[in-house]
Image 1 (spheres, rainbow, N blue to C red):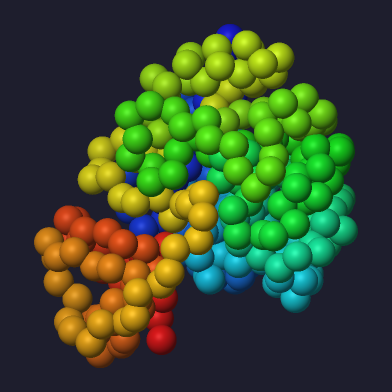
Image 2 (cartoon, helix red, strand yellow):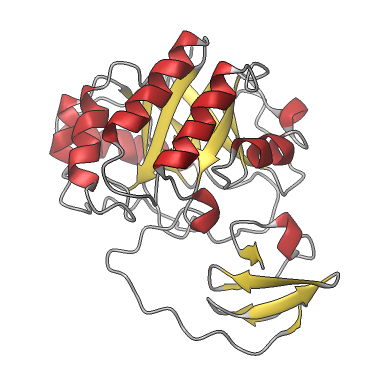
Length: 286
């Protein structure tokens, strides 16, 4: 590897784009926790991945929420060889039930037993949507089956500088206890030196980064947000046909190709490719 170490890239499955040719690791990101759906969505862009190829499981909405039964499904998929076309799994752990420490450990062991590397990414210092996040992160720090730990230094995914917010009672200093290599997720590659310097000042050595922003596309709100405090969900508005160049709020209902969808994140539909079926991070089918 280069002096930087890992040069990673989150490749969105709903966008045609180019993965940087010097990437040492790239992740097919769909926002889905259900293995078959994640595999189906990721198949669209799998041949575009560069370097070590990973598939992501999880995300920052109901489609990506982890439960014990979902982890059962993941472990079964791992053991049946469904992920054999990839070199690793990126667990995007944002929302989920409590008490999943041991279940995640089982999934990580299954991954390693099937020659798959393990990457865990979370919003800032810890998952914002899991109430026992402190205990979960302590378990992640101690777990020797996790190869990479990638805290996200952004909330919306369009920031022009790193966001070093600490959340859910987990401090950056706690990362000194981790066995995994720390490779922060950042919006753009040119923010890595700032991240590296920040962490070095508090005694943490980073081993590279993963870039979130796509190389040639309109920025999209991050499917893995990390609000510091919950905000009330607005009541759904009346149903309308999805259109481009329109502002949508959480809970808005739209129809597209005779199917109804609910908005999961506030956003502006500035790109014609952001149709509800193509953006599961933004729209949930009903």
